Length: 281
Length: 281
Image 1 (cartoon, one colour):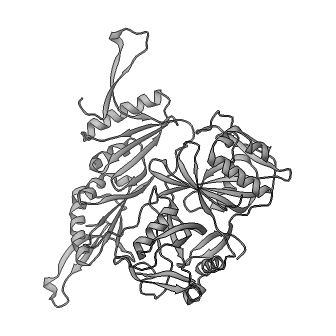
Image 2: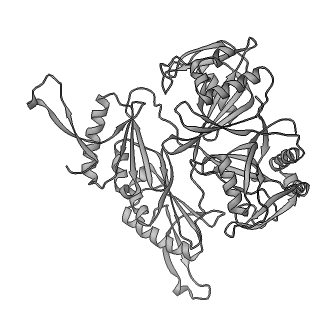
């Protein structure tokens, strides 16, 4: 075996002689902190050979008391997926270039972590000193051609901070630079795309520039509009969610509302995070 | 062809005679509002036959000006994945029992929606009238065996409201019934599991019952603890994120802090949602 995805492991009682050592080829995996094994396949392998190795490995991992077995297959090794499924694995999640499969091999209750369940979006509330709001009309989506002026919106990328995403999306859609001020409100909805849920954060930003350069690919039109005119649009008044958010924006414009500021902090495992909360504690 | 995953479609200029009608077998798909096609495979098919159908269908969809082609394969049809990948599809997302693949066939910029990027969790801040907090020690995870008392926490399921998830998780872990009051703060962190990001909402709940019945599978111990004693734990004081959240909880206990309440509202497409914001607008 020259394949890098297998290792040779000696299974032997320490009392037995060298002659009794059983040489077994196993898949190479990394042990995690939850009695799990993560196997990341990188090189091509004959599916039958891979199946034999997988079965032997599963048997060994059971003996070792392992619980969750993860197998990550790059899209180039799609021919191995069927073999893994036949060994009782489920899909766990996928990104464009890989599929993660998992099987719980312990007798105890399955405590595998859930797949990502939410997409996250932002809406940018940006007002100038004339109480004008930066608004856009979009080229696609449900508002296309409706004449409705709306807040610039966008998707928060995996690994991106909400406060950074709001600044980035505003710049991309309108060319306007801004600083993050606070989250005014957020909305949770379900079945937004396929089965996934959605969290949408209305972010107040302070503009640092005012000239509009609209994004050709996504934005039909962009302009500064008096905030009362925005809130008075029939579409906004007729939709409870839009109307409520417009009222929050108006209250914020009148300095009678404060949202959640972003405070950098470190998690228990030492990662930098942001905590969003009221400032005055 | 008797397979339900194919349809017969007539491709013909309306001017041509019946004899010139070209009979082409195509995969059956649903057209979406974004010039996309969603094909949901349900029955087994020979991989070679499926490949031919897919190629003919792609050619037809291109002529029709379609852009994003989605193919959903249940795990039972894992043997068809390789065929789809060979036709230039990427993985988009997966759940335990299916894989969604996608290919952008238009000449324009790919505007396919992103996969879900975040997992969502809750922490429950539950205080009785003696200023005692409901706290737990967990059987697994990074706090196992540490002696640290923490807020009950849990994962928000796909399709589940944050305010409902907090009540459910509290009940499961401690047996205590409660009502949702407000979101005190939230934290965003990254690379929490594999590459996914994480949003964690600290929810204040008002207890309706007080007898503790701890969950055997996940909870080592649960009790009511004076809130100052919770905040004074060395681990809490030494970790900026925990210390900050404890200060928020203390401020809320002293009625000098308010978070975001949950207000039902309807989205533009008529879905029920919750908007979390300050009440006083």
